[in-house]
Amino acid sequence: MIKYRRQNPLAPEKDAELSVNLTPLLFFAVGYLSVRALLGTLQRERTGAEEVAAE
Image (cartoon, rainbow, N blue to C red; front, top):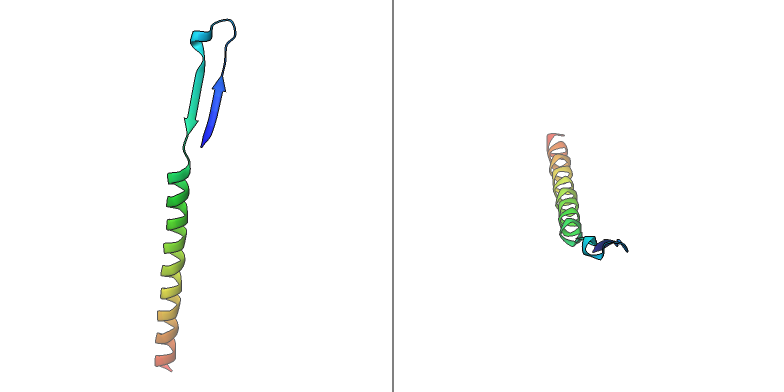
């Protein structure tokens, strides 16, 4: 989680705080990359088997 806080000493009622949770983005990125790697491996295995069968 990333937190950003801006304080205004002259007007404390205008203090601003922003928090961003990057955990869901991290889970999505890891899942996407692992599924992509798995599909790439399966596709390479399948095309390799077809080339061997053609010979």
